[in-house]
Amino acid sequence: MPPPFFHTPDWHGGQCQSGVWRTSGSSNGSYSNLGSHRGSFTGRNTGSGTLFVYASGGNGGSAGGDCANTSRLQGYVAGALISTNASNNPSYGKTAFISFAVPAGATYQITSYPAQNYSCGSGVFSVFGYQT
Image 1 (cartoon, rainbow, N blue to C red):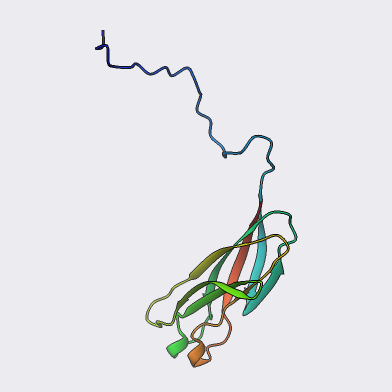
Image 2 (spheres, rainbow, N blue to C red):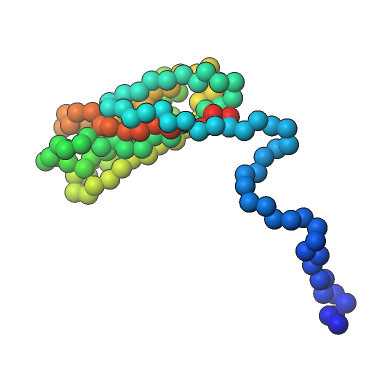
């Protein structure tokens, strides 16, 4: 018999279940692929909840020299710079990513111009959204 201070767990109470945590009665959010873009992408949150935006990429492509392997992404909400990820180091390949929240009704923009000081051209990036 275990000592009196030892509690034997009751494994019959709550059962484990895989899945997603949800608040009872709430609607689920939805993911969407907002496409692949070069240079700039502008959108608007037309939903009634918050839109969470994720962008990845930002590389200029096959440019060489000082433009090789550079990346840059910038995110704006209602014209204000909210998020930036950039690397002008041409020595290593890389991918930038940013994420930010967009309130209902607000516009947002993502731009990608790697190594702007060398005129490397536009970067290519993919955008995904999660609408609550």
